[in-house]
Length: 308
Image 1 (tube, helix red, strand yellow):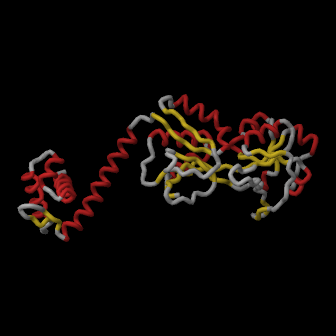
Image 2 (cartoon, rainbow, N blue to C red):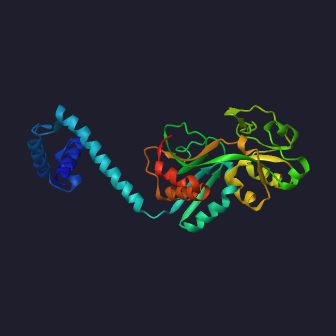
Image 3 (cartoon, rainbow, N blue to C red):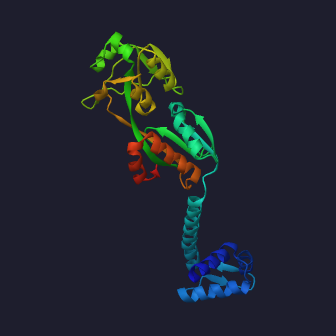
């Protein structure tokens, strides 16, 4: 601790270029600063400052030593901040950006709010590319690959797209056994609101993506209306599996062609690099991972966070 104290005195003196100002900031006398610097120079065997009656200046050795000391002190301060954040109670406003599909996550989000009543959620439901830093988001959740190196990413889980229809629809139109048979069915299509393009259904055979032009019975820019139309016997929809677990469990929707849509997609949480994730954001990410992707939550947590 004495060594760290002398390093801190040296850094203050080097940054202020004044023993008097360094002493004022540290709450000690200028002579105490001078003595601490002299002891440090004696231990190191080098002169750190050129001294005159009016000023001090770093020697070349002192300038090199300052860079290392600033890094050491910065790491210690960062470690202290991380511990303080880890022990802080999650509370306050939490600004989150989530994809449009997240309206189907509302039961989980509502349960999170009941579990953490001191956190106020401000959620932006959007599929657009948001500027996390400029727009002031604490955390952003998105699907697919992360390509922004200024963000830290954590994999919350993986999901698959499934093609579903109602029992009454299949009783009337038949159950497709090959992807090409979808051309004879009513297809409920999803359109990206930002690009105005239809999402291609991820149909594959022997590892190759199939290019099948599907008919269009209805189009929506969100998953929820497509799911509701499918439940009303109006066609087939291709939606993320975690958004329709309840419908599959109660039998209002039935999945088909599952061997041809076996491609996992990653669901991620992102926040600015160089910033320790806040307790409120951390518990939000943990909660969604656990309740939306229970199978992969443990593995995702073990991998931890990394650069996007």
